[in-house]
Amino acid sequence: MRFDWLYHESGRIAELFVWHLGLSVIPVLIGLALALPLGWIAQRAGFFRSTLLGAAGLLYTIPSLALFVLLPLVLGTRILDPLNVVVALTVYALALLVRTVSDGLDSVSPDVLQAASAMGYRRPARLLQVELPLAVPVIAAGLRVAVVSNVSIVSVAALVGTPQLGLLFTQGLQLQFLTPIVAGIVLCVALAAFLDGLVLFIAHCLTPWQPGRVGK
View 1 (cartoon, rainbow, N blue to C red):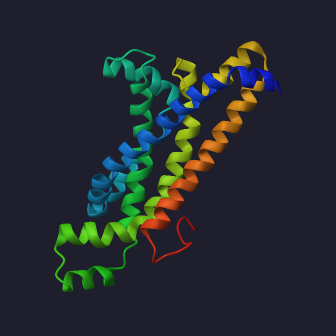
View 2 (cartoon, rainbow, N blue to C red):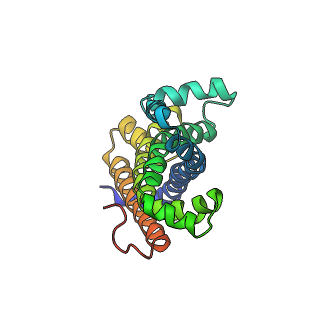
């Protein structure tokens, strides 16, 4: 390890870290916002539920590099535009979270739903005030997978030149220099662990009635 190189490049590495953080988190937030209504629809789709969830799952099988290359043609953006990465990772987050939201709503006991209806909750209020809060532990487990996956997939965008920690890998390979590769791996693992812990913390705060059960 060349610590003098790390010190000299610390400003650029910090900038790449911030880019990596943004490109990992923003798509998950957009994906969750889209997955909530789609997961609700899938959970109530009856016979077509498996078809909808299967179609959403197929989105995750699209190779990330192919998506990064194709999206500029579809969106009319430049190949280096970070918007391509945001859209691609939103697709992957959506593919994971639609099933998670559907399963989370499914995890709510029918007895609880009947009790809520008996107390006067109408459908929208029951969904927002009863079903979604009780589904938080399951949804949080899916969010943990989505956010950690995004931290990993973002690195692939280095092959099309998008700024983030993956550029340390390509730089290390081109120069046959191990220090930036090790630094990139350590920072990616640290970022994934931080975001995973953050999701756990937020879910714990939202479910005080289930301490320590989130993600188990």
